[in-house]
Image 1 (cartoon, rainbow, N blue to C red):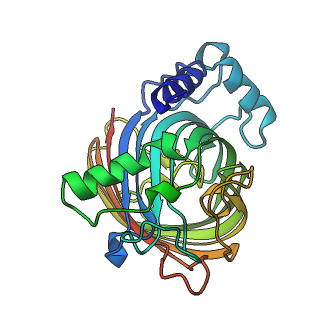
Image 2: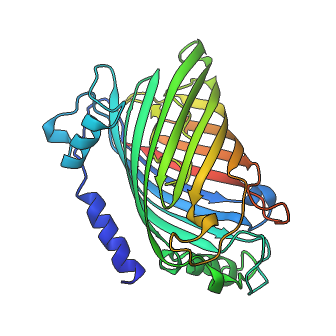
Length: 342
């Protein structure tokens, strides 16, 4: 099965789970995320990634008419997602790709003690429940790692055909083809909020999450802070790559809110990794792998600007290096996000 047939199969599977949720006073969202390690002016470790996302309009009541069979199961049996008054329910769908490379792109041979070439391509479906005090979300990720992900072709097109980087010569050594399945869960709780609505305000929250699967199995906990002008209700929208984190819209914005919003965010969190195909290699034991520190500290600083339906975000990820001390790769990158609410 080629990667296009596989992608069509995954897309068809997720579309079967589509619910038809609408509400007259809530907005849906289209978003494009682009990630690149421009903060280090390198192409190592997490080299690049992108995602195209659709987030449904929110609803205040989950009914038989606006949820699928899978959605019904999620809201009945996943903790924190049951129907409750005063909560907004959303669903999100995304297509995403991640590209990982070692620091030295000029070596066609496997590089000891550095991250392997690897790429993932996947589809997600997420369900979330939130208000200004609480957020719970669950995500299903289906994808593929290996040559079928198309990561090699994308990077070579950008680097060679567009002339935007060094020719990556080691893709023959990449992690092999394997189907990926990951289940992710996250929650956040508001600890404090200060300031005045429509003016300068800030808030602080705490939360955590976990992932189970052969893409990224982990536990995570952290805190987040937001401050700025016309701060929206909800929580920090951290643009994690699908499968490593959750694709969701964690900001509450309704029709008629046309004023400028300008605010910053700071997220500090720790992650314990149980397994990741990008560093451990395939479950079968085939393909390259690397020894690494399973405990990560991460600081994510963001700038969020919106006016009416348009939104822009810029985030910088600074992460402790999980790779072997002898590896020259560093796990830092920046995210650019463009969105439109409708």
